[in-house]
Image (cartoon, rainbow, N blue to C red; front, top):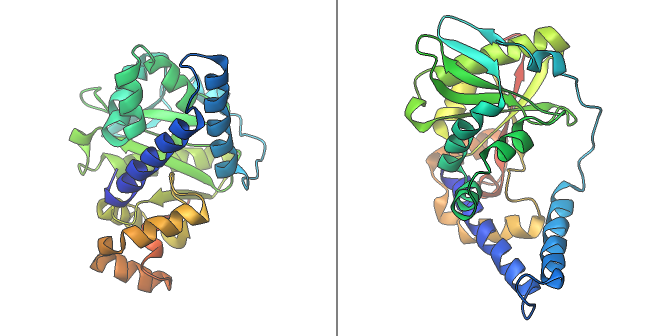
Length: 266
């Protein structure tokens, strides 16, 4: 994860911790009342973040999930995720996510559960990216939620395999095969405004910069405004150019991510 969204994640984690501490103040540790208070705060936060989301029927990828190989070329193999990928998946997630680092520190033996929850739901479809020569797992790619249109792709690579061509090659292979199966022509990719390598990757693939959209952390108008006010010093020349291109105030690039659209076939 790159600078802006990483900072947003850090600050949101602090705010969430403060809300939880306030909610259970004076309640006995381990008591039903404390557990109920924690659950209410978390449920309210989830509901607020997703209240405007309209859901469609999920696409059924059950047949594709049973394939030994989803698609491949001479460099990479995309194989549907299986339970034994759990340790690799979490090892990648902890490189980018503060939440996952915290989960791993607090509780052990949760890797399989995290994989199943994140990547193996009926509405998701994910593949592990393998190096075709060595069979080494280098990352994963997939559709986050086929109930939400346009379908958003997610891709993360193990840090030691970034900027080696795996990402762009995997995106092209994956989306072209999904397009062949479903006929769905357009896909979304959300990119951090500070993540220049990813911006270059998607533009090299012919992606269209459609505008700004919400990122994974800042959802509510008040938290976006607070974050913008605190971090105007993070606006750099690249962000100013992007803002000019999108005809928005540069500060908006602090509280949003870039909305790229890819049209298949790539």
